[in-house]
Amino acid sequence: MRLGVIGYGLRISYIFPEIVSEELGYRIVAIADLRSEELRAKLGTRAEGVRFFEDADTMLEEAELDGVIIGTRCNLHTEMAIKVLRRNLPLYLEKPVATKYEDLYRLKAAYEASRSEVVVSFPLRNTPLVTLAKEIVDSGKIGTIEHVQAVNNVPYGGVYYHSWYRDDSITGGLFLQKATHDFDYINCLLGLKPIEVCAMKSKQIFKGDKPAGLKCVDCEENRTCEESTLKPANLDRGDYCSFAVDTGNEDSGSALLKYETGMHVSYSQNFFARRGAERRGARLLGYKGTLEFDWYKSELKVYMHHEPRVETHVIDANVLDGHGGGDGKLVRNFLECVRGRERSATTLGDGLLSALLCLKANESAETKSFQRVEWNDR
Image (cartoon, rainbow, N blue to C red; front, top):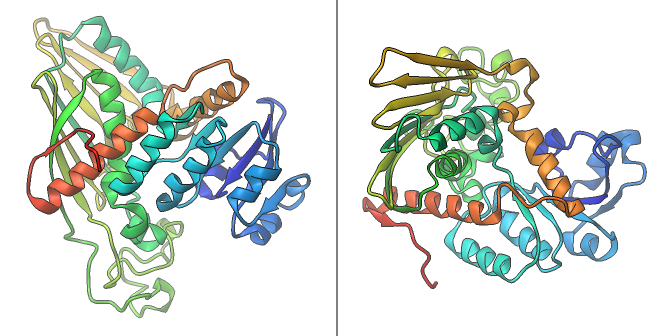
């Protein structure tokens, strides 16, 4: 299989680490990226046989591809995806699929007019924990799910304030960066339609009066600041000061989601929790029992409400790849879609709904209003 990449960034280089995989049967034969010379040098001998292009259109016209992978910065996902959808090629698309309403509606129209099979990068619903949770929920063991409490305390949150992610005109804010995953796995577990959202977000920590563009290496406080990227624990977070006037993104956010049955979900995310405070997972409550799981613990528990029994399931984290075992499944599903042997397990329809929820959450937080989750003509 001949694959092309538009935007060979860190995420794509992580989940497709090999340019050639004999085991999985693919070869990356073309890369469209403005950093072509830098990438050629970084890949070294692995770049042999790879054609580098300065723009996506030329690559798509000339490279004779079987499938395309998009890993550009977030604000370009829609534009690049539309180019691929018009050619009806199998597509692997990083999240968020859009960062503003205008792009979301353009992408929806292009998807509806295309024959492309699209795999959106939603690894969490593919993890063993969610797979097991889905089995238990669907069995009726804990009853109909009538309330969900979900949380994401991010221990590596500094990356959203030290690196390019700090520019929220590119990221669209942290609902679109993180909650997009969580909203998707919640929708998957519930199998219900979200109809309304209200949200709140705040920026209490990562703000300050340091000059715009300041880098940690140039700051006089870089030996004492807890967020200094000169510290070993923060080396991979980026270069810039997280307390400068040009640091974007909220550092906490919460949302309430109402579903078609009347039940609701509470979700909260935080970006300055550290060490043992890390947590990502949910509690799903039915009348018969409660199910809870946490990716950081690789553990799922079922509490039966009407009998003295607690079941504990532990996933062997040592055998899992990235995102709690979800990344590998994403890649394999995409490759099977390219071969025409599978359909996408994380469709662009799923990606569009998740992005719509995140944009509605942003709008709710900014306007202090409840927002209907529905597609309107724009």
